[in-house]
Image 1 (cartoon, rainbow, N blue to C red):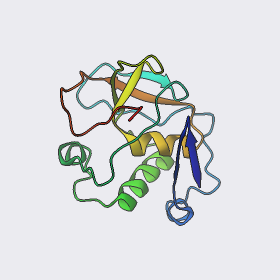
Image 2: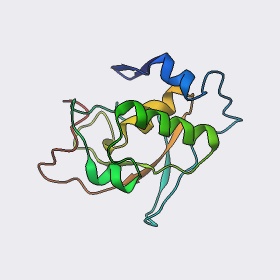
Image 3: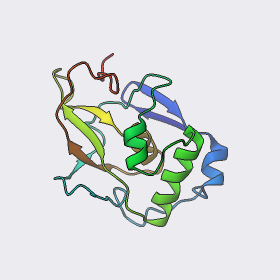
Length: 147
């Protein structure tokens, strides 16, 4: 399945969607996945459309984030299947992390949550849970939406 968000195009393999039993998935009127907030942070629901495309450098792995979300050591396929399974089962999923953008095109830049954003688009959600976090100076874990 091809996913387009603004000028960014990516793909979720059809066999992964089939393996996750997402073919014919019924959102049952839900506009986003069920959100978990284990750190009791303030969470907002944002429309997906005004968020910047989720871009991440190839090969970037975020061990602390993955460990916090129970995904330590998972391959991209395993992470995708895990997230799709959580969406299908209505399990709570951690919000994506964003910070205020310096450019005029988008209010936010995405910090963490590329897989969750792309998979939300793939299953037809129009909204996603977000947490605003401070931008880290010289962070190697995130890239600007326009880079």
